[in-house]
Length: 140
Image (cartoon, rainbow, N blue to C red; front, side, top):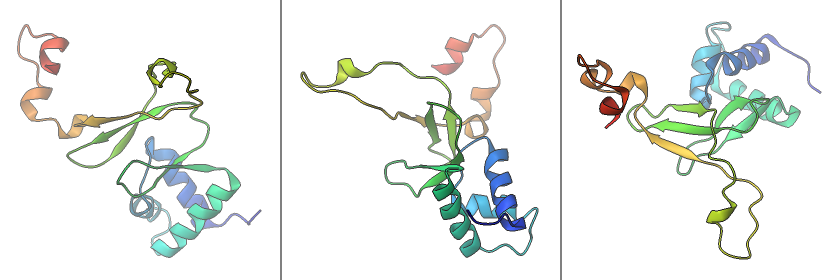
């Protein structure tokens, strides 16, 4: 086990505070709030160490650079905003998906990624309900 450093603590704090998976560059920007001289090579080295320790886990989305999130969230899925590219946790699951597998196959695990626009990237009109509208009408 490696010793804890200010850099490692800042990186761990950044990942835990984010409430969503972060790219290494996002980890760097957040951790630099605590350690202004922090560099990207130190972030990568510490991310690898945190992975090896089991403190963070890798979030791999198709065609994307890896992101990192703290362990301990339990089973969950992700949402990627197609406008800003950020990834968010989705703490819901459709459940047993074994019925979708071909006959004779066994499902041992699954990952689900939703795509769309996050709340920050929604057009202003879509965020502002008109008088008398319902949630269903706004989502359509």
